[in-house]
Length: 275
Ligand code: PGA
Image (cartoon, rainbow, N blue to C red; front, top):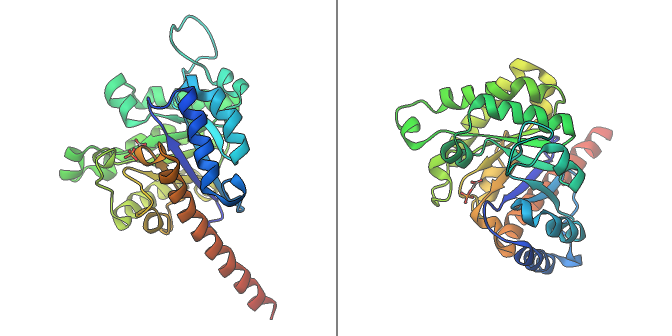
């Protein structure tokens, strides 16, 4: 078991209203014996629906053992910001997590590193757990700028994340892998995750130890195990495959299998140590 625990988070983007949300969770319950996502120590599943579906997701997600989160927040607590939602509101509504700085928000809505850092700060202050998203475009990868771009994006959120080590997470999502079916190879993803771990370590050892780094970009049931078995991949941020209960449950099942194997190995090691 990765001592940081594994988080499987489903980013629904602008999909699934309240009625569809209820149907999703009934279908998800039917995927697991006992009607709940297996509660193995350190394994957590989470769904991030559109804000309008939060209430339905909270009610039905709780029954299946799934935490709920949001896809964005404003950096202020309240005020004249038409169309926006704040961290304290989401916390009050019962949300646990929030994704911040997703590449679609950066590319389509002009979000900047500074803006994302302000949002991460606001979320943590409100007790909402941020998942800060980073990742390079295809052009940046092709000219060898991946590590540079990701480093810049991660550095922007290091200070707020360090305020409460392990409370927030980072998601590495290469933009060319999002919604394209082109997943990063486990080795390529691990290379970037290790670099991110190093940056966290530069801030503090505790931050590096405690922070979950998720991989996102075309994660599916059949590639999840290879990715999640990498040393520095502590979970997945799943888009398309999280929209359907069977797809999401296959990824959770892969994480459960790895967690069970790791717990068994840790148990054996402990027994061997005790003689
Ligand atoms: P995808 O999306 O799994 O559909 O590639 C991932 C994401 O955008 O978070």
